[in-house]
Amino acid sequence: MDDAVKFFIKSLGGYRELLPRQTLKTLKGQALSGNLEGAKKGLQRKLEEARK
Picture 1 (cartoon, one colour):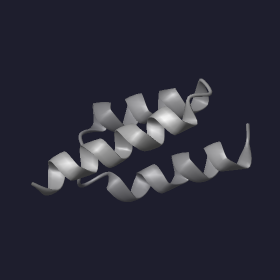
Picture 2 (cartoon, one colour):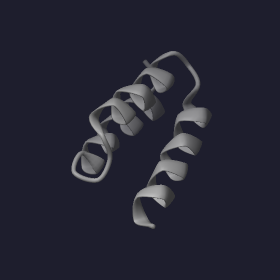
Picture 3 (tube, rainbow, N blue to C red):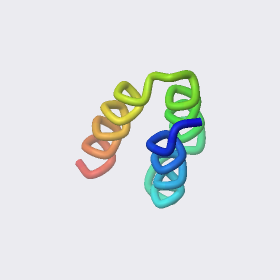
């Protein structure tokens, strides 16, 4: 596993109270499958939705 993927997965823990569990699991799965850029984009999109 790449260091960038590990860092991303670890950083997802900080959003536990803000995002639903299923969203976090989906983003983690995307990162582990190799779609790190898509997971980052999805995280940004969900954070924008949550802040509105």
